[in-house]
Length: 394
Image (tube, rainbow, N blue to C red; front, side, top):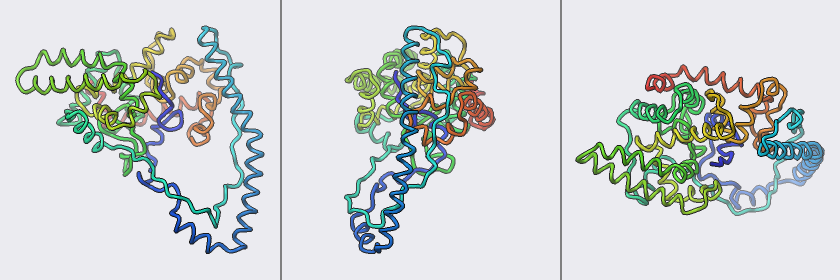
């Protein structure tokens, strides 16, 4: 699996879960009638002042780019070099990282044009929520996920499957704590919790899977899911067996759907943005399939680390680092000696746009500080009711 990074800005989506989001169908630009009125109202003095400020802004940005451009180019080159050395099983040293912190823009903001050109409004693409996922499942596969009678039932199902698959209580609970703030239910969605009213992404569940994660995992692990449910069906009879047989038939159709494209993140992302992809994501809510998806989201990182020769048990914070930053960058961070973590800036593990919009990475600007910050949040959130309930389920 090749997680895009994804979620927010190549890292730490969980840290953005508490931020409000714009209306799902908000307009990117003002309506033409509004901009025309603004243009008519703008005085010559306002326009002159705007042009003066715009020139100052452009000059400041140009000076900043002269420094920032080469810096981020060097970050990219160093990353390519590390990847090449890792493929050749060569040791990674401090020389393989940029050891200076990136420049941050502190100049004036771009001024608002008092007389903007009229422009056609553009609607943002809606972010599907639980109701949309359930509707898609019903319409595309004539199926409704089997939801738990109580939250603790889902936690117990997840704990049983996760433990059988090789995840530890410490890993599962600490990742859940960080991803949901220690209180999230099985259907928690990014943005719609802790007082939030609007979804900010499709990230859902204990380990905050995106629609693309669900499609990706269904394509890669679907055969295992079918095998597990087939075994469970053999123990059932009557209406329960009939319902499980229907679920199995739907699951097989979903697996076939996700395998209609190459096993690549970009291809899976396209499927995830369809009604059928939304239906696949609805399986996160199912008490049988949801725990499997949640578990394998983390298990792929464990398997990745083992394949790279890292046989030590991953701590909760190490697993979360891989879960959020992607297996490649996460493995880089996890295997880095503490002495190096103290010196290596976090910018080495981000794309430029992601870093510059991520105050957490900027504030905790070395790998060591980032680990410590994440570990501290896990300590705090692990005491919350949801985390305690999950721990008791193991």
